[in-house]
Length: 291
Image (tube, rainbow, N blue to C red; front, side, top):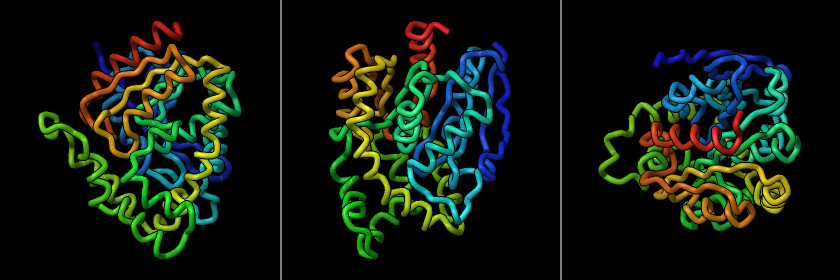
């Protein structure tokens, strides 16, 4: 099987340059890949070639992340990023697509689904949470303190999350020893370099402080699951301490037909299990969507 190339493109949305990766036939079913914190579309570099023979894969860098613009005058909230992502899909002419959501990509993607349920063919959630029980208590303690009251004292522990050490912790924690040598140090060095750019402190603190707005939407997300019966595949790194496995299992409460797979890895499951995840996605979409 020949490997289709990944193209690195940009499009201007609302005056902001959005960078994105694209691969696959132009007329194939679309899978929109939405990355999490603190990374970018770089997290999909191994997955995209594994699915590009069957799907059109599009992976944008959220505004403020990756190679996308980092304007200082944008309102960095999850509502703001979701609205911009919706405009991004419209700029590319995407009217029907499946979602791959991870970490920050989950509330962004699920806000898209609330606004335009008719556009969503299926959801693949990889450590992308929508339930309170999915929140790891220790990892979320400093974030919850910041959400409750933003002060210099509550900001400082959260800054550590995007430090080089904090980023590496997210990649390595929960990954068994037998898979540790599959982790590429390039991944966390890539993220750390981008997180160190001027302006990132304000961007990232603002977004993390806004995360409580996503908790407020959890009931709406869950109602969407119940009413839409959207096909959903949860592929979850079971060692993740940010979004713990209970969050994956919880999808079955509102979507009894949800397919849940816990993988022996951590938060960034694609770093160690991209081939396995690609296999699960291909089988799932073929059976449940049939496009």
